[in-house]
Every structure is written in structure tokens, then in C-alpha cells.
Image (cartoon, rainbow, N blue to C red; front, side, top):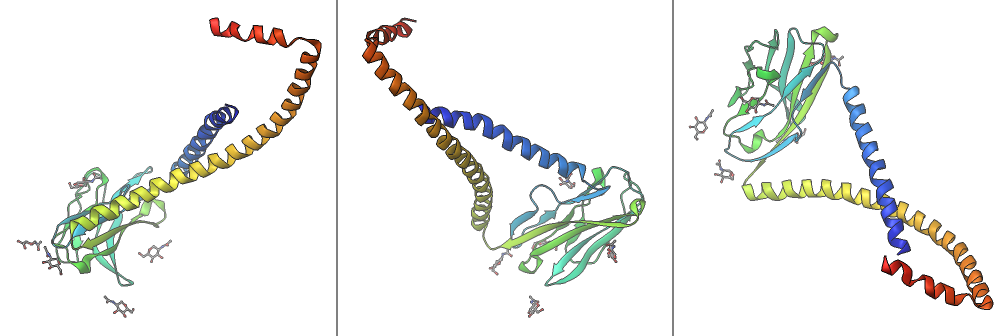
Amino acid sequence: MEVQWVGMETLRQGAPNVAVTLVFTLLLGVWSAQALEMSVGKIPFLEAVNGSTVMLPCTYASCIGIKNLYFNWQFNDNGTMVKVCESVIATETVTPDVSIYRERVDFIGKNRENNISILLWNITFEDGGLYTCFGRNPKEKDKNHSAIFHLIVVDELRVVDNTLTIIIASAVGGAIAFLMGFMLLKNFTLFVLAKLEEKNKECLVTSSGIDNTENGLSGSKADSKPTPKKK
Ligand SMILES: *[C@@H]1O[C@H](CO)[C@@H](O)[C@H](O)[C@H]1NC(C)=O
Ligand SMILES: *[C@@H]1O[C@H](CO)[C@@H](O)[C@H](O)[C@H]1NC(C)=O
Ligand SMILES: *[C@@H]1O[C@H](CO)[C@@H](O)[C@H](O)[C@H]1NC(C)=O
Ligand SMILES: *[C@@H]1O[C@H](CO)[C@@H](O)[C@H](O)[C@H]1NC(C)=O
Ligand SMILES: *[C@@H]1O[C@H](CO)[C@@H](O)[C@H](O)[C@H]1NC(C)=O
């Protein structure tokens, strides 16, 4: 009973602590966001079967607005950055003319809702690798910004599902393991402290019990027990 109570107390205290820490970390991340931000989405990788057509997603965001934003897509071809396409976006509402330097590539974002995604037709194994979505806004002293998207080309779709599940499962598992470890450690500390306290209490209870018996008061203890049961 004692151990269970300590466990519940730890859960009640531990979980909000972790949640608060996470929220602060997220907020700090948002606050430190720079004027221009390139994003390839929440899942910055994709596994696709050779021969399929895939979208490489990218959007930009700027709290100070853009003017003549330069952007390009680059492919890391065995260490050398090869330009896939590039253009300058005059304002947020226009569809830019995009120069394309690679086969089987289409600019499909059209700058709608800051969307500068591209489409890769009929992918081959050579298309697999890291793609960088790069942006530079003259409004902020030509500072460079980029985001990287990983395209993995596989032979069969079954491999895709497995790998995705494993990656997600290990991420979730890692987070849970971290929480469990944290709670267990705290739990253990509290448990030891409670045990030490309990030991002190036990000494008091034992001595008072002896006193009661000696004074012939043990009968009154038995009487008091059934009373809560009636309630
Ligand atoms: C994918 O690659 C494999 C192995 O090179 C080949 O046999 C298969 O025809 C390719 N599939 C497509 C759709 O290109
Ligand atoms: C990548 O580069 C290394 C050395 O830089 C070279 O040995 C290798 O053949 C290259 N691979 C491809 C696929 O070009
Ligand atoms: C992709 O492959 C299909 C069928 O093999 C072909 O009809 C189409 O023209 C190809 N698209 C591009 C952009 O190469
Ligand atoms: C970008 O545009 C493409 C094509 O219209 C669309 O499929 C994709 O969902 C868009 N991405 C975002 C983040 O809006
Ligand atoms: C930004 O990138 C360009 C290449 O695209 C490079 O020449 C320049 O030095 C970079 N600027 C900064 C501030 O990193």
C-alpha cells in the first residue's frame, strides 16, 4: 500500500514537470525562429520505390515579409552540391519563373501559400540522397537559410513500411524509456526516503503498541476498527 501511494505521488508530480520542460523547449524553439525559415515538413525524409514519382516538399515563412527572395533546390551528389532548380520570388503572391537544371523535375509549389515544392518524375536509384531547399531574403542582409530533405529510393514497398515503423517505434520507445527511467529514478529516491521515514514511524508505533498492551488498551483499538466499515 505504502509503495503504491509513493508511485501515484511521483506520477502526479513527475508528469507535469516533464510536460512543462517540453513546452518550454518548444516555445524557446519558436521564439528563436529567424526572420526567414525554410521547412521541408515534419517528416524530412521519404522512402519511395524506383520508378515512382515523388514530391520534395518545401515551404518558406517570414515574419518580416519577403522581397525578391532567392531560392534553390540542391542535390548532394556524392559530396558535390548540384543545383536542381533556382528562382527569385518577387513577392508572396506571384508565381516565379523557375530555371530547372535536372531531368524529370517540375516546380509544382507555384509559390502558392509560400510553397516551393518540386516534383521528381520516375525516380531512379541515382536520385536517392539529400536535397537542400535553400532560401535567401535580401530584406534580412542576405542571410542564408536551408532545410534538408532525404529521399531514399528502395526496390520494394514492403521495406518502406518496415523501416518507417521501426523509426517511429524507436523514437516513441526512446521517449517512453526516457520518461520511465526518469520516473523510476525519482520513484526509487522517494521510496528510499519513505522507507527511512517509515522505519522511524515503525519505531514509534511499536513502542506505543507495547504501551497500549501494557496499559490494557488493546481492546479499545479492536473496537475502533469496525466503525469505519459501517460508514
Ligand atoms: C527498380 O529496380 C529494379 C532493380 O534494378 C528493376 O528490376 C525494376 O524494374 C525497377 N522498377 C522500376 C519501376 O523501374
Ligand atoms: C563518390 O566519390 C568517391 C570519392 O570521392 C568515389 O570513389 C565514388 O566512386 C563516388 N561514387 C559515385 C556513385 O559517384
Ligand atoms: C515517366 O515514365 C513514364 C512511363 O515510363 C513516361 O510515360 C513518362 O513520360 C515519364 N515521365 C518523365 C517526366 O520522364
Ligand atoms: C505544395 O503544393 C503541392 C502541389 O500543389 C501540394 O501537393 C502540397 O501539399 C503543398 N504543400 C504544402 C505544405 O502546402
Ligand atoms: C550564403 O550562401 C552563399 C552561397 O549560396 C555563400 O556564397 C555565402 O557566403 C553565404 N552567406 C553566409 C552569410 O553564410
